[in-house]
Image 1 (cartoon, rainbow over the protein chains, first blue to last red):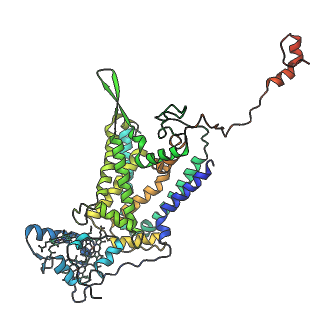
Image 2: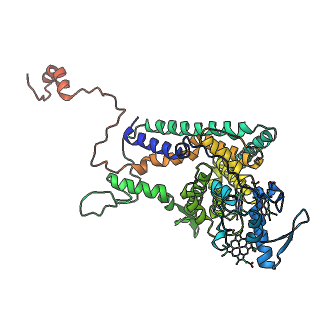
Length: 125
Length: 334
């Protein structure tokens, strides 16, 4: 092999860089998040599978309905009426942002910017 | 293969690659598509790239190839172009940095035009450069953003990228510019290939297949994020399990995810054997990574075998008597 003095470090840099996920987590097991579900309520505003993956879509619809159409009442698929509000509806049942929303979001690496304006519920820990 | 055959062939190949996990995962082969194939693909990727680079490094480059665009270093009163025609390592490093990060050679792309009958002229053609920049950098951002699936706690780099990438704050989940840019970039690279006749003529399945594959990966990724959502928490359990060598296959991740993962695995495994390996090859381009010092340093051809020489002295020793007899001049009489 020619130029081994440059080729070998080059290959090493490539391998070390590209295996970053393998060595940076070595030995660490991260358990899947367990968001703390509300104790007093049984069901969410939509079915759980939908909420798990599409809750941000629902929030977006709510936001548009409230802010653009001045419509604050929403009837869920189960016929129950809900007051459309991030702070006063979602966070009424899911009373802890840290123990609920943040559990998943930290794990999935998302940081919703909503809380720049909307007020988080007070955490009583 | 001609152009349309190449295109159909590549399209069918990618179609089959989409169907395999669709059928396999529906039939319950989640650990094959979620664990075994990704691991195998990554092993092929690393072994393949290293083998390829070592193979390149075994071919000697015994001379400098000064395909440069600037004045070579010569007399002190002639201004040398140290960036385009470097004679030392510093210049070469700068040239390589510009090449790798800014695609400087592509920036010099020209187009041949006919005008006024038989006259020709060369015009600058920067669209390819722009398309390549958009494509590669958006791919890089998308690639780095995926580190959120492979690190826990998620590296701050990802959080930073997400906030910059999604700064438009359009929609929820919020739109990432890099995703759209990547789709636009790969689409442009494809349209360019089919709309320029000369380029279409020389295009082969090995040109179309990677484009279609990357298009399919981008499309499934965007669909998964914005349209047919999958359980991201489950996805991370799977990917993080892969990264920590504790593979788990959570139930209930949408099949779209397995299609995406399988296509990415194919891309990884295909990488070392295709044109895509220019990721490593760009660092070994002899026209870019060697200083043009042919006039300062003697470069010996490493495959030179010892040449049998017969010097004049030896010749004269052999034929001296006959030469003297014939009256020819000799250097050493006797």
